[in-house]
Amino acid sequence: MALRACGFIVFRRLCDSVPPPGNIEFLLLQTSYGEHHWTPPKGHVDPGEDDLTTALRETEEEAGLGSEHLQVVDDFAHELRYEVGGRPKEVLYWLAELRDPGTAVMLSNEHQEYRWVRLEEACMLAKYRDLQETLRAAQKHLEARQHQQ
Picture 1 (cartoon, rainbow, N blue to C red):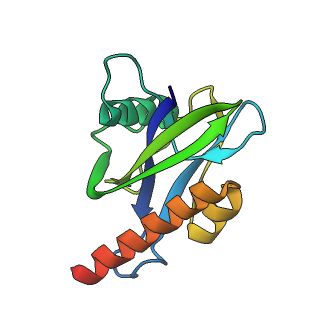
Picture 2 (cartoon, one colour):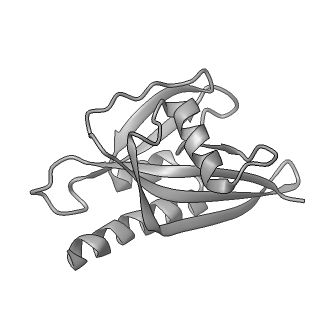
Picture 3 (cartoon, rainbow, N blue to C red):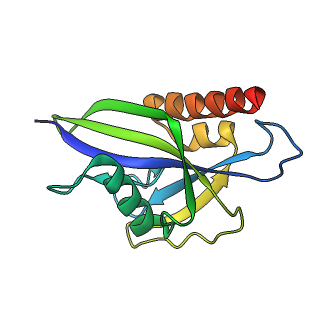
């Protein structure tokens, strides 16, 4: 059975008068363990917990951003599948906008640093190709939504 984790690709808009991609920054957290890789907030699903509840809980635990800080983008979800230590792992990411771009991030002890970065820097920090593709898909989705408005 695959390990399952869920999280949010959290983004903020810096200025409504500037169209995407220039006004969008993504939140990445640097782990305080292992290779100190960069990732959006995410974590393992607890027994009896649904995926969205896990994503909300983990984002609050890891970044101090609760449901009152986030607006979930209903029409975006991206699943990654890979192996960790020979075991299959699935990670489901939703997209969530930070309601107030000035809200402070409060890291847990699982992370040592955070950054708000535009897409290209996010992809440089996120070394894994599948995560880079997920970030690009999120950016593309946000740009398409902007054009529809």
